[in-house]
Length: 113
Image 1 (cartoon, rainbow, N blue to C red):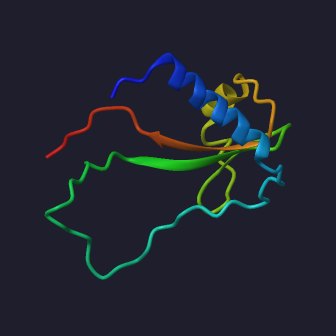
Image 2 (image 1 turned 180 degrees about the horizontal axis):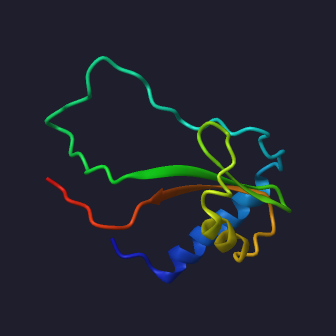
């Protein structure tokens, strides 16, 4: 499908209008990340395509307008664990409260079999 400049502009205007309709709300005090579910057997389905699991960690970045906190799924601060990520995000000059989903992974030799 070919998208014309007029359509792109209309989509941008729709997004701007929508953002004006949204009500401001308080930043959640404690995020509730999706946790693993313990099951008897691993999921397997021939209709699904599975990606290899690279060793990594999902971290939630919470910016309250002043401070940036990196949180694990158990609500433990991860700023000390990933100081480079915390410093890098601070350079983004975030101006309003937000939450960021960050996936970290180890860089090195990986052997996929």
